[in-house]
Length: 468
Image (cartoon, rainbow, N blue to C red; front, side):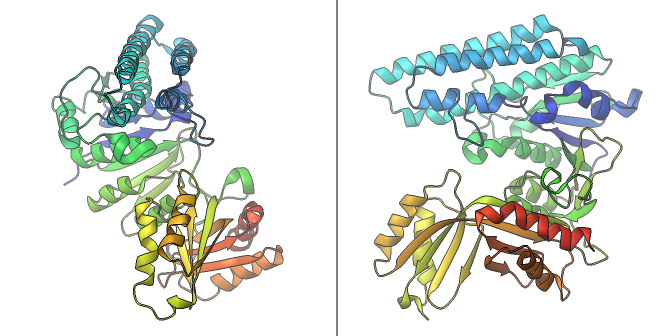
């Protein structure tokens, strides 16, 4: 049985505008008891994790990247993080932050990390310590400080604004024990009265397996999910800086897109596979299995109920719910006459993908050709291709950049969507390189040239959303 509280996550971009978030989301029109029975999981302020680890989009190294490469500039990079955190502190003084306490918190954490990394540098210099044995823990340590900073500040500001907020530090700072993930959460919430306290929780959790090691940059949504499941929340709410819409409002236009309103976990899986930042697939799966719905809301449009993601929703009317996609795709095409009617050919080919830890978004096949469409980001594609050539010497292997544009909806099992989509692309003078649709008909995927990625989304949205 679910309890009456909610678990709510605030993303980094929204956290950077915490004054507005506090007025719109956390306090709003609530008073007294209405302020409580809500748990907030917070991300680091926008840009901080990029500085600590690496830039998520460009891959430019931050503190961790420089330290891992044995580049002494990690010291200045960490000092830059300190200064950026102190800048954030100054920006929140006007809404109640105790700057002295906040600055002291930052300086103690950053000084501690400096000491730790210097000690590791000294160990590395002796030559008997393999850096691979401590780099994962270094990444964990650096990741944790961003969320600790924002959670500490948030609780402090809310306390000054009359809310009984409580800073819940799950980062394990200077704590020797390594509990399981579940125990870390249970221990933290053991003595909290959610009817009178508002927990402000770090998105990072220190536990035995390492949250960064398992989930990398998507870990805060895993924390959100784990807390919702363990505390049996009635609903999980993700506050973002935008609504979940039928298309990208920046590309298509805010006046042309529509808020989706309601969808299901099946669709959430499709969005996750396309690298859409709606909800991490592992996070949504755990909540789905426990029957906990997820709501995606715009943090700066608090009156709008946003999009509810539930277990069994199917649209009453046939409709397209979203046009989206990703352009960071490389096609790996294997042509081999020997694959015709040969059992297990796929298995042999995919061994290279497994060995190089490459996942694919979709694939196409015919009698003598198999093409996998894989994300290029952080994927060792060249090594995988060389391995395929070694494993299948008679095959010819090609690779080339493409984009995927998807048409997604809970109820599209009627004639016409496919033909209408193909015509929209043709009318826009876009050549479809491949098309994939499973019999379940919830996701039609068109492979197009990268140069046509944006144009294809605009054309499909106009035909399937705006003109319907």
